Figure 1 (cartoon, rainbow, N blue to C red):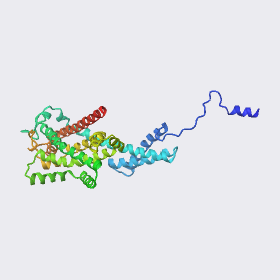
Figure 2 (figure 1 turned 45 degrees about the vertical axis):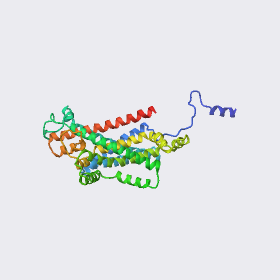
Figure 3 (figure 1 turned 45 degrees about the horizontal axis):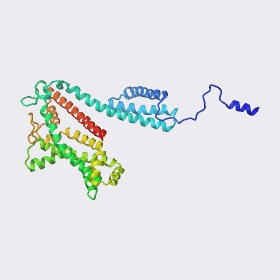
Figure 4 (figure 1 turned 135 degrees about the horizontal axis):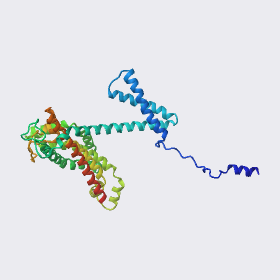
Length: 366
């Protein structure tokens, strides 16, 4: 009877939940208490810093206030989380808060720049002549319904197209040599590429100016600016291409060789298509850097105000137009400069979207 009673006591009652093993709590899962701790830390740290920084210490400045608020938030938030959680979770919460703050700062900086640029340039962008006319015969302080940036848009497209036609084959060929060919010279080439990646744009412009304009007598033109752009774009494409090619699994190369393909066929038919996305990213980065160059076109080209399609003649570009318009300090010219900067941002965004769509469509077809 005693044994039966013990068995009956140990059995769960009718309707009682069945016993289940305790599962470990997910560190990234935030409960209601976690959200309350986060909000409470934000509000309390803001109140403490407002009283101490502004009234007790009589401090001033947005940056100093933000730094003190962040430090106070970390201290209070760590104290609140530590009341009911072990040390690893406290560290994870603090690291997560820091990473989210860094991402928010980057997004805020980018968004504020884009919004401010468009807010200052929309008055010029609403005029149709801004896209269909050049500035020949138009003064810098002329009304916005006169003149435009057509010559700068065409100049930027021509200069960047010539630079891409030169830099993309050289950059990808350099990346293929460093990763697929190798040899005694690959390390030297890699060192030169890494050094040229940090090359200031103005040095590339001065180099082309001394060699082509002073040495060979070539006049300032869009062609000289394109050559200088290509000098700065080649190392970016080569460095990004090397990283993209190294990510390709070696098993693909071995499988291609096992099927009888030679080294060139394996590289052109297997390795390069597999690294298409990374190569496209490197090209986008290089073009974005080249299309926004100001020092290069300022040294190697001339700020012409007329439309031309001949790259051997002085040719304006959007960065050079923005620079020359802003230096006039005329309110109308400054509005044109911000309008041109907005158009430049749109062109870079369209380029990024088009290249991504082309790469994705080719990847799906394959």
